[in-house]
Length: 145
Image (cartoon, rainbow, N blue to C red; front, side, top):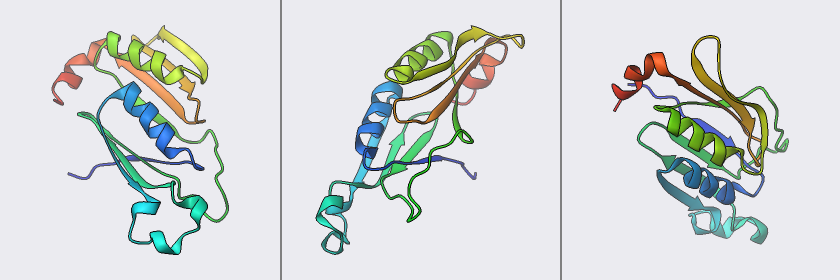
């Protein structure tokens, strides 16, 4: 089965961000630091602590990240969001509270006209998150275990 994963690019704070996401979302975090990589002897000293690649693996999704910005530089925008479909009302409230810490709540959690609990935020790293819990389709989430 083909799988789509989110990959975030940071400007030197990937380690901090991925540890934050692990604290918020759980899972196992795997990191490759540039200074520990096979190309360590070819990189400037100031880049040795940068994250070459990271992977946060949870039961429901994989989140990846890196400090390897393109030559054009890092440009954050509002055209990409991470969508987190939650399995319970308790989960959506917990994730929303943790991810919004130090960030900006764009729309607080509320019950929508379609019957779901929904909200969105920009976290302290400038990444956009959409959180959703649909009580009517909760059996769909439990069947994904």
